[in-house]
Image (tube, rainbow, N blue to C red):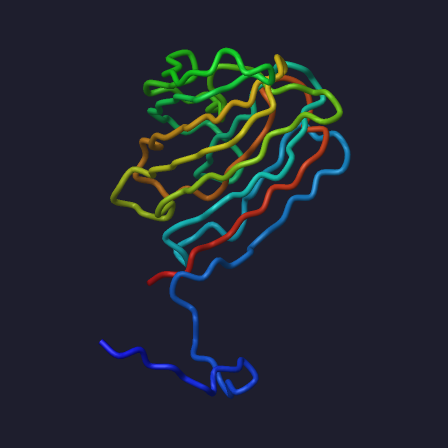
Amino acid sequence: MALVKYNNNSISSVTALGSLSSGDLNLLATNNITSGVSSSSFTSNIDSTYDTYIFKFINCHPATNDVSFTFNATTDGSNFNITKTTTAFAAYQGEGGGGATITYDASRDIAQGTGYQQLMANGGLGNGNDESTSGELYLFNPSSTTFVKHFIATLNVYDQGDYSINPHIAGYFNTTSALTGLDFKMSSGNIDSGVIKMYGLSKS
């Protein structure tokens, strides 16, 4: 097979670009936390415009040591208490090179409960000046009135015991009502600082 070489391949030669709407990430909201807040909510722009919503967490830092970053959903805009079934596991490694393993964490999953889901497994988020968590959460088809609402989350946590913990959390909100919002908070104390962004993934 002959190799075809194009001489006119400069980006400056491009005169137009087609629409790139399918699969685009569209930034819908940013919660920039610069001082302590009890929670961070998103209660608008979650509708049938998008089938998939992505939340990105950037250096979310707790005021209290050894806590979990958590979330819940609402169907009415104010009560974050939707019944859910979830599962959690994590890989982790200590700064000193010890304790590396991967394990299921039954203490972090929920079986038909309405409480906040921990976005953690096998550890607690530290509140040292350099400690935080970052990651992302996918929420699928929250406006459906036929199906339950699936979610998948993965983060990395600077654990209070100086471990790097990579929790994987997944489950479903067991409701056929449309979800209209999510709320994020620490299991105890304030979110001291951090950024949470919400994106909509354009329909294909």
